[in-house]
Amino acid sequence: MDLSKTLLLGFIAGVTIVIGLPIGRLRKPMPSLKVFLNATAVGILLFLVWDVFSAAWAPLDTALAGVHEHTGGLGPVLGYGALFAGGLSVGLLGLVGYDRYLARAGSRAARGGPGAMSVSERPPPVRGVASWSPARRLALLIAVGIGLHNFAEGLAIGQSAATNQVALATLLVIGFALHNATEGFGIVAPLAADLDETGAVRRPSWGFLLAMALIGGGPTFIGTAVGHGFSSEALSVVFLTLAAGSIIYVVCQLLGVAAKAKRSDLLAYGILVGLLAGFATDAVVTAAGV
Image (tube, rainbow, N blue to C red; front, side, top):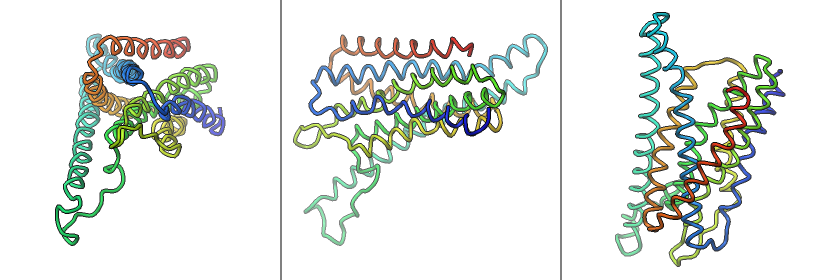
């Protein structure tokens, strides 16, 4: 399959992430709906953690089997192991450091309010991501984690298309497109609880939602282009483990938000729905023999 048709497949697989984004603009979501949406996002992300780890561990498992069967050495085991541990560490701890940096920047801006110091001493206003609400920053972190995951999915599409496995590539696109539709919902779920100083819901702009779609879904297209040119299990392991680390951090944040509501029943229902949605869409990819 030529590059233009392959890129079209990558675009189709990635663009469906926008389907779930309009939920972020709900005007007055009920408190119970907020908890349920948050919990469903947790379920979707928990599925992605399992999915990512399964794919990232496969090359290492193959290398270990080679050692056991005396058909391979320890070199691949140590190499893939280092990539696995390094990617996971950077993905998890990198977001911890970045989130703390944004929180410190926001608190410095809050302390520099009117009357706190003279105009000449007052720090410059915080701009960019540091000025966003915690809910919007969490949505961004979810989009980043999903984007890393989707880059690895794009690699699979590009590699199968490059080897003229058209049926496989098509089924991958269908499955990943369904995946991305649920992932878009996971990105915007925290925004249902984004309130301003008066307690009113702070609705995200369409520009913000499209930016999150680009961060989360765009890497599918990029990965497809890269995968069409060459295949690399090492590159896949790096991006998958980066995604796993970042998604784990986000899940911890979402569980903290859910705990404040003290609705363990809705938390369980939402997680169950999210998990089932993830496995249902994965069934299409499994049907392709992947």
